[in-house]
Image 1: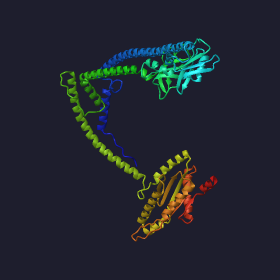
Image 2 (image 1 turned 135 degrees about the vertical axis):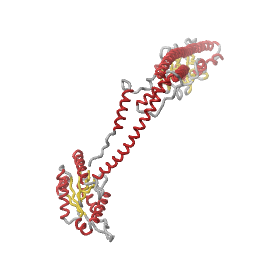
Image 3 (image 1 turned 60 degrees about the vertical axis):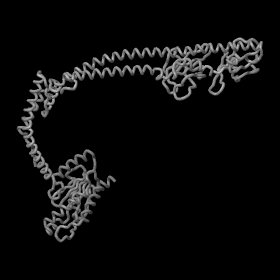
Image 4 (image 1 turned 90 degrees about the horizontal axis):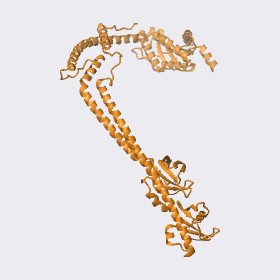
Length: 556
């Protein structure tokens, strides 16, 4: 049965041609729709914005570079200067202690063994050794490690006075007698001196020995805990600052050697604290410049919008008309220039266009309603052509078309495919005895049982007369037998009431089963032969074709 096709009306053709010509005539030569940046107003705004942006960016770059360079120069001078002051003050401090020891050694030979008040004020301890290095006596804090100063090349050694507290053991260069003096001074005396040289509260100045051990420090250690070691290689940069990691923090620092010892004075500052002023100035300049850019851009937008709004409205209206719109008008311009004439003419044209379009749309609406009804009728006819009118199952024609598609699919995927051919036992006798109405009722009832029992992927169809067929994809011999037996059992156990006596009638079916082996004609012949054997074997049973049973046994 052929489908009912809708013919295009003359009104549709005329409307389509008019629309095509209209769009072709108003489209620009390149065939592109205008963008938001192609209008005159947008170009003016972009020009002003670009000029303002370039100027502000140039001014920002110059000011940021100048301010940043100035602040960096100040920081890079301030920290090395503090470091140099701390190192320079350390050497005279050590020399003063050594001079006091020489005075004390001279005094002991003339005035007595007790240390003078001046010596007690300078030193924390004093140890006296004989010529062989044996300890004779000591005063104050003078641990046994103090003797290391006698063997040191410079006569100075670092000693541990207490946990986390270090001191210096200093021996005078000249001895006036057989006894040798070693003075002990705690390095904690250096804390006020170093603190005086701190350029900021976040800076650390430390005295570091040759192994990188921090002997004493003043200021705030970077990171999250106390600082015990500093890498001299990371800090030593010949008097200039270097960036490094310390205690998990990003820092800048430098180290300067001490002439008398193999020690260094180091200065360390967190990077954010050192250059925080630079970042603040740069951020402030950037925000000011950004405000200038936004202010000038807004001003340019307002000026351009006021001047170019009528032209933009006319341009947008032409674009919308080219896209097929007609239900709009341009706001009137209260002037007497060319823009006002164009606006008035365009609005008149749009009113005439709307009237013509309403007539065309009304004609199209009637044609669409008629076409919709024809399509619905065509769909109903199409369903009727593939559906059995009595059982509402698919008919023989649809089954053959579906079988063709399934065979193509299984030949590609190599999946098993089974067919079940079902015939009602003694249907002619029932039809003759009870009448055709009862026979039709039995056919309808069996179709309902089949439809509710098979799987969703299976196809159930009325093949003709009292024969039904089930096509079961992805089903081998065992699964096909189980499905056939289930259908036979469901029908045999159902009660059929087909007349006014309300007496239940028992109906049975016979089924032949076959598996597709590559030959479509042989496929259906095997199912028909199996059904014939089921009838011959006493009916109400399921028979699988012998070829399929042999194939199953060989595969097993």
